[in-house]
Structures are given as structure tokens and as C-alpha cells.
Length: 94
Image 1 (tube, rainbow, N blue to C red):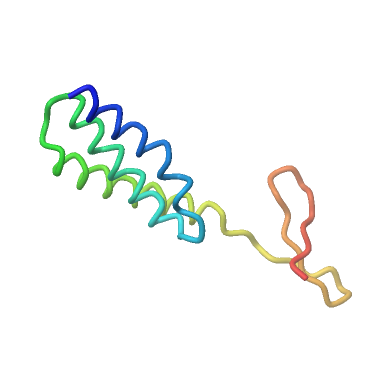
Image 2: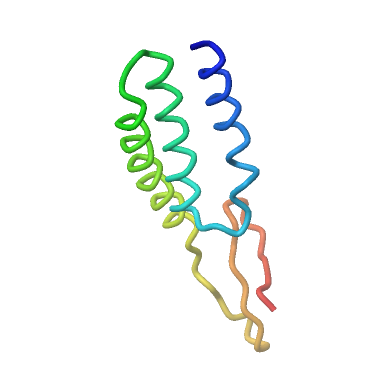
């Protein structure tokens, strides 16, 4: 049982490395699914149910993160567009 928990915990930590190029919703679902399975295994509950619940929760969190990253684009009057980060720094898109 300890080996299974250790393996699932390792998978949770490494799953973030394997999600390059994926969207936030997919990343959230994968990490949540692995995390839910690990918690279920550690507490003696059904691993499949834990994975399903974790994946659903992760997808929802991924969606919220994705929506939070949307930025307004502004024009500088010279044909260039930029967005402003949380610190007031302008970032040009072109």
C-alpha cells in the first residue's frame, strides 16, 4: 500500500511536467485525476471514484484559471497592440 501511495504521489508531482502544450482545462483534469486517485488510495477509498471526482474538480479549476488569464488588448496609436499585466507593465503582442 505504501508503494502504491508513493507511486501515485510521484505521478502527481510529475504530471505537471508532462502537460506542455495542453490547455489549462486539460492540465487541471489530468492533475486533478491523479491527485484524486492518490488521495483515495491513501485513505482507503475507491481509487476510480477519486480519480473521476479529482478530474472533474481539476477541469473546473483549469477553466477558472483560463478565464482569469484573459486580457484586454489596447492600441498605442501607432498600429501596435499591447496588454497590461497586474503590475501595470505593458506587453506588446507584435
